[in-house]
Image (cartoon, rainbow, N blue to C red; front, side, top):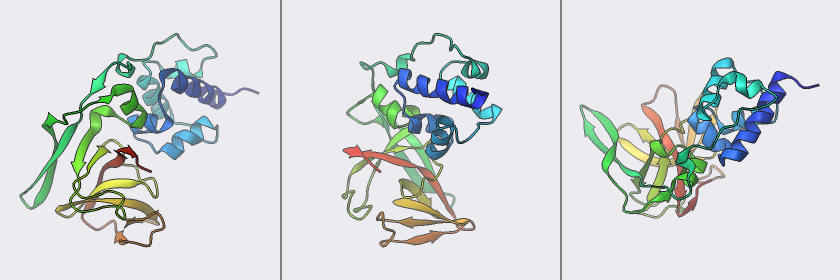
Length: 217
């Protein structure tokens, strides 16, 4: 028997396909983890009304539309036009008043990305380029590399690479949850560069690293 949760999941799956959007990109847009969005689509989790409204808004719909047997006819946003290009700004940071301030720069990279591709990776309007200082992620990222970071993706997916601030320093590390704390590490096996980041320490996730010449996983 069909129920509202199954109807919502089926409609959401259809909208993702027709808009060329990935589950990961949707998760970034509504500030939820990829795993949770995946559970909703599989019918293993029921979204709250607030989340339903956020998801519907991404596609220019009302929450009730996603519970309907017949979705309203909607066109993919112009932002997914394959001919449109986006140039990503750099991340600027400086130490002031004993803290590290960050912002997107006015200047942008001298090359662009297809906007529809950026939407598959996350939220283009939240993306910045960060240049590495020394090799990172067990030498997977060389010194002076340009890494694409999506600042809207701050929900920790265990094992994924993130740009983090620890005190007054920036670093690129993989993060894994361990109880109430988080372990930062360089390799997938959590054998190199491990450090515990407790809830009482001065650190934060600034965004997920999504690309360097190829998709980062």
